[in-house]
Amino acid sequence: GAMASRKSTASSLLLRQYRELTDPKKAIPSFHIELEDDSNIFTWNIGVMVLNEDSIYHGGFFKAQMRFPEDFPFSPPQFRFTPAIYHPNVYRDGRLCISILHQSGDPMTDEPDAETWSPVQTVESVLISIVSLLEDPNINSPKNVDAAVDYRKNPEQYKQRVKMEVERSKQDIPKGFIMPTSESAYISQSKLDEPES
Image (cartoon, rainbow, N blue to C red; front, side, top):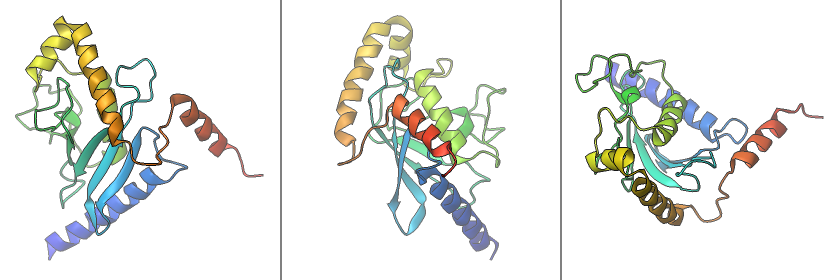
């Protein structure tokens, strides 16, 4: 029926995006992506890394899980940090609140001009938005009020707390995984762009 064909459309689209995002030539170095289970393209495990060396999040490997709906891309995926991280826009259960993952017209979205979900969004555009939100929280509608208050009023305390989490998260780096650096990421990118001799 219609549901089954929607689901197969979603899975072939996800498979294509998964292949691109894990292809060493095209991959964005800030994400380490694996399937939770090879027979299920709808649940991805993602390690999020911030390559900007000036960032307090630099050096962390933040584990997250992304679950896609069977009617993807018509509905947005869900994204949750596992374990939760201390951040103004992350709920205590690790779910991330970001406008790009809200359906447009969703009453949850306080910011009408913010970019909400639409079927043209890709997994890549979502991931890039998530990394920029880490750096630059949306303080207007915090989900973790303590983190938002610290971010505004006790920036030093906020930084220390994030640095502790960065240290803790290093235990989650997969064995044998080489953490990308902003330098190596861009160097390998430019090497790949050179024509094959």
